Length: 391
Image 1 (cartoon, one colour):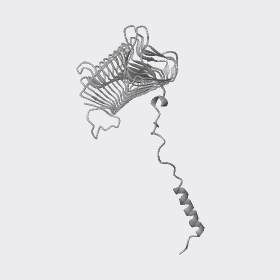
Image 2 (cartoon, one colour):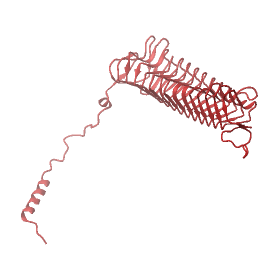
Image 3 (cartoon, helix red, strand yellow):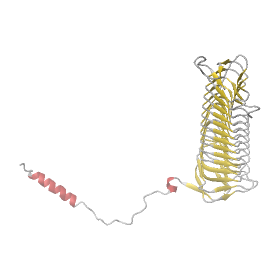
Image 4 (cartoon, one colour):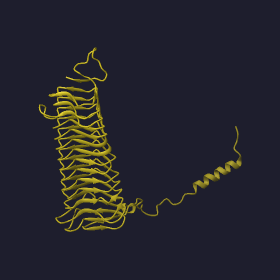
């Protein structure tokens, strides 16, 4: 067994002695103090205690109570960039002769408005149409001239606009409107220059329910009982997984190079789905609409759709109505319409479709169309890969 050298024992003893005698007094010098910063230290905020209120500097502002405006003036005017207004669960209430609840002056960016109500302002609840890259969250704009007007590249989330004399929600190009609702407004419900509309609902508006410009995606939205069309997209966009029901005019309209897929259009006052030029419609359902189930212009591709009980069965209404030229129809199903397929244009290609229980005719086509043979029942002797069926 080895023995530790004497100098190692001395070093260890000195080391332990140093550790043992290095302690200071154990009594704290005073009571514990706060270690966390206050909210104002993290983000200095300015209270808004009365109206009218002008914001001329960037920063964060918040309501301390419900506030009422004055005739001839807006409630809060914003003349600065990078402004956050937290309504803090309170309301901005307008009066007769007042202007807007929140009014942005000049071209601004990075406005944030959240968490509260804006109502009773004769011009608009929030007029931020010239505030780009802004964010509106959990705001309800009710009984105003217009609801919420947002600039380009903005985000609107979980907002509601209802009972406004004009439009409900309008955002300019490149914006996102998500999980918002617009109801009982005097013009259209939700309007977007371009961008994305997702998970929104538009009901009982006096214009179109949802309308959007070029390069827009409209996904998982509903439009019902509007006095105009349910959903309208002008060009170069997509309408996906949407429902349009009981609108006074058409259910869904794609004007130019629009893809419409996995949508349902029912009980609308005119046509279920309308595609004007260069559009694609796939895997959609159109039923119980007052005129045609699916109505086409020119150069559209129509695949795998179902049209049932459209028009007045003994008088008018086609499952698929084609007024233009150079369309492609394949694998569609028409059931219990006045006409199954009414094709008036030329150079349309029509194969592998089915029409059953049509009151007038299953397939009626004009000249110069390319239509697969129309058969009653497929058998071994009449098998044809391109055949349409009518019975």
